[in-house]
Image (tube, rainbow, N blue to C red; front, side, top):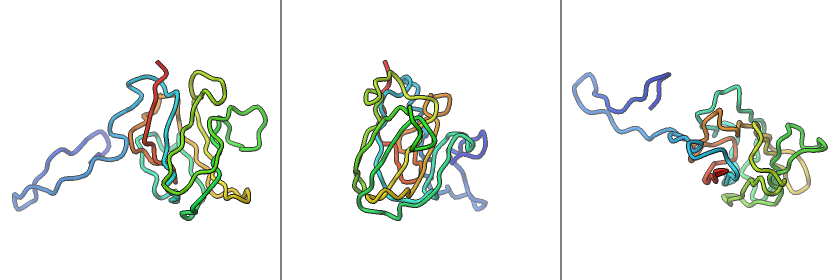
Length: 161
């Protein structure tokens, strides 16, 4: 468990007994140590923004909305905060089912690396925006296995080397 700059590895109660083990928080190992991301694989969980768990600075992550565990959604991932903005680099577009994995890949936009910010928009199949998620992807902020940004859980990382 992390408290500011401290990571608790062991503890004892006031009675001298060993404290119960604590699960490591999401993102404990920085995947960026292998290089900047060329592709990120996420699992769509259908959760709201309260599921967010990561080690990035709070001001680097945005989340708004709730897909309410919708079974099938349309996901658009890009480098712009507005899903209708012209000239955006599109990392992924497609229908995704609940608990299904999908990959943001720079090759889809003929790029070599992700931009500093990535925005993911979750729509219902009628085109209504359900959730907007933004997070840092240039590796000046950590990306960790199992980091969660709203309804998106990071399950895979491919470095640019």
